Length: 172
Length: 227
Image 1: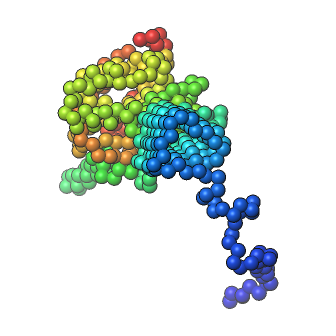
Image 2: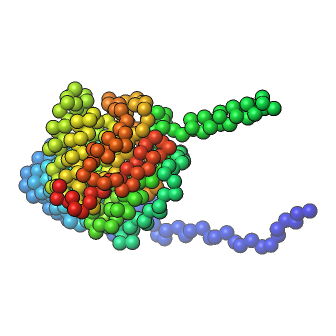
Image 3: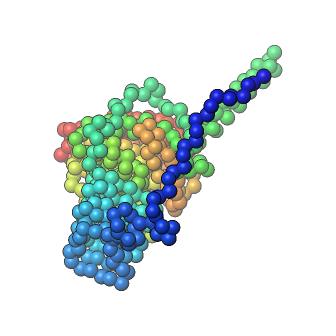
C-alpha cells in the first residue's frame, strides 16, 4: 500500500578531509605557533606563600593564591583570586573572578564573577555582575544600564485586590 | 430532595476547602522552590525606572540573580545590607533587646540618598521597638519620591523558624526559597500598625495576596524629603 520512496537521495556529505600533512604524533597546538599549554599561556600565578604589599599591574591574566595588599591593575586582562587568595586592595581589571576573599572596591570593565565561597567586602562597579548562591558580598554594586530600552514596562492597574497564586514548579 | 441539597452543599463546601488548602502559605510550604506572583514588584520597578540612575537598597541576603535583574533592568546602584543576618546574629547571641539601638546607626548611606528600598519580609521578624527603629532609619535614607517595598505576613501561625529569600524570576513573579534560621515570624502586623511604622510615608499601593502576604509600597512625598 505504501510505496517506498525510491527517489534519489542526496549523496551523504563527503567526510571531512584529513588535516593535510599533519604527522600523527604532532600534538594539537594553537595556530598562533605558541607551543605552551593554553592554561599556562599569558597567565601568571602568585602562589600561596607569596605576600605582596604595594601596587601590582600588568598585561597578562593573573591568578592570585597568596596575599596582596594595596592596588591591583590589569586593565585588559582577567584577574582570578583563587580559593586561597586574600586581597586587601583596590582592584581594576577587565574581568575579575573571585573564589577567595577580597576586601576593597572592585572595578571591572567587563564582568565581576563572585563564585561559590568567594567573598567580597567592598563596592563593585561593572556592567555585569554574577554572584553565586554560596558567595558572600557586602557593599554596593554599580552596574551601568545595559540598554536604555531595557526599562520595565509600566505596570498595568490591578483588576482585583488579590492575586490568585499560581505556584509553578521551577528549578533553581 | 433535602438530602440531595445537603449533599450538594457539603460537596461544594468541601471543594472550597480543598481549593483553600491548595494555596501554599510560604510559612508552611514544604517546597522551597515555588514561584508566586507579585503585584507590587512591577509597580516598584516602574517607580524606580522613572529615575535616571536610581540607588537601591536591598535588606535581604545577597541574591546574585536579583543583583543581575535590578542592575540590568534599572541600571541602578545596588547596596545589599543583609538585615536578616543581623537578626540572626542578635538572636543567636541573645541580645535582641539591643537591635533598636543597632538599627539607629546601622546604615552608613547619607540621608535622602536612596531611591528604592526592598525590605522583603524583614519586619515580620522584628519586635515592636526594633521595627520602629528600623522603619525610622529607612525613612531617613529614602529620598524624595523614593519607594519602599515591604512584605507583611497576615498568617496567624508563625510557622517554623526559617527565613525566605525572594528571588526575582521576572517582573511579575518571585521564587520563595527558604533557608534555615533561629528566629520565627513575630505576630502579624495589622494594617494600621504597618502604616503607623512608616507614618512619614504614604501608602501608594497595597495588595493582599492569597499567599497570606500583604505587599505594600510606601512612597516618600517630595515635601518630606528633608526629614
